[in-house]
Amino acid sequence: MDFIAIENCSKAFGGVKALKGISFSVKQGEIHGLVGENGSGKSTLINILAGSLSADTGKIAIDGEPMASYGPLSGMQYGISVIYQDFSLFPNLTVLENVCLSNQIKDKKAFFSIKKHSDEVKSLLDQLDANISLSDIVGEIPVAKQQMVAIARALNNNPKLLIFDEPTTALTREEINNLFKIIGMLKSKGISIIFISHKIDEIMEICDVVTILRDGEVIDIKQISDVSIAEIEKLMVGASSVYT
Ligand code: ADP
Ligand code: MG
Image 1 (tube, protein in one colour):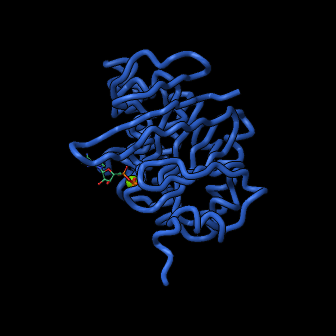
Image 2 (cartoon, helix red, strand yellow):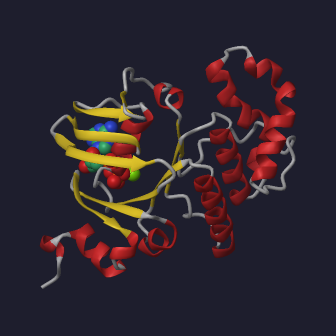
């Protein structure tokens, strides 16, 4: 069963065609890799899935139902959360405050009563084995822990689809192992994952399926068990870029 399905979606910025009629779907509980060179349309696609951009053409279905509203909050209302590459946290606020910022989206006054949510946030962080305290100032904790805060904030919305944009850029190998363990745990709970990376070895390690984007088009969709790193690389750059 597809959690989300996009059909024939296009998006242009002025004269730049960022997406040219792509179709893309993610099944429930699947870890779906998304690869493509810079400018291939990855961010545009996730912004459309998250609702922060609307497509020019095409249809989106979530859990089999047409996505009816668009807007920065619509993705979250549909159970879609993005963990951005820069985490988009507030460095001067505490861990608890950062995680609870997403409560405010549902309830404008929620931010003034966050202490009430300490237990829930603590149990989210325990689930991630994060070992940070609720009162830590986010800008003062290590990057890998900041990422855990961003994941906890996303989980606080009970997402059905989590999108990780280049999540390993600032991590050590050991931290990557830990992140992959967490992503595996989320999958086992039935959450769908989109894992965006240009590191193909990581895609091979963690994903079930990979979609290859090039110049705003879906070039291929491969089961990880049926494809090699070299094949993915070749699909990413295309024949025109092969050195002669
Ligand atoms: P990726 O994330 O794969 O690097 P993007 O989705 O960011 O690719 O970009 C796809 C294309 O759309 C690029 O040519 C980029 O320059 C263009 N683009 C993306 N966002 C904008 C924007 N807000 N205004 C103009 N052009 C944009
Ligand atoms: Mg991008």
